[in-house]
Length: 212
Ligand code: CDP
Image (cartoon, rainbow, N blue to C red; front, top):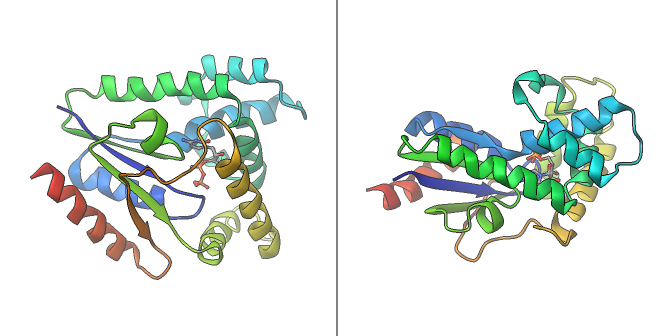
């Protein structure tokens, strides 16, 4: 049996960092579903279109080949914004859902997988054996996102990062299709005042309860 560790949370909550740590500790393959939305956003951006048409966006998703995408180009302010805008298209979500379910199938020889995103605990793997909702204060999340963005753009304005993060939170939480929310059986961890190691040991303790 392949157990699913599903992790959701808002931008900058630290869910990606923890997903990577858990994945390498247990040797469970990891899928960062944000990469899928970001890759499609990147193709939209590259096409030069300013208004995103659902049919075109879906076509990008259906032909998506991650081998052709430069992952380093996906974490920019532009892609942040486009990914969060297009992610309200239900046809796109449906298409990427197939991709995510397939990830579990192709790893059916493994004892577990780790998947993180916005709707993993609620829509993609509602029956996941372990569910986490990782969050943090807006200030802490914006600081973390700023540290990431400043690596590519030294002129970035922190106030703008906070504003954009708030807009993205709002879009992600208020959209009608698969909004970001806390699943009723998710373990909620606020990482605001915790180190990565502290979050890691909390998460591992919960996982041990299930896999022992
Ligand atoms: O890493 P960060 O939390 O900043 O973002 P991400 O996980 O890479 O996701 C980028 C955007 O894709 C989010 O703001 C969402 O709008 C969208 N997304 C989604 O709708 N559903 C997912 N499962 C993952 C990402």
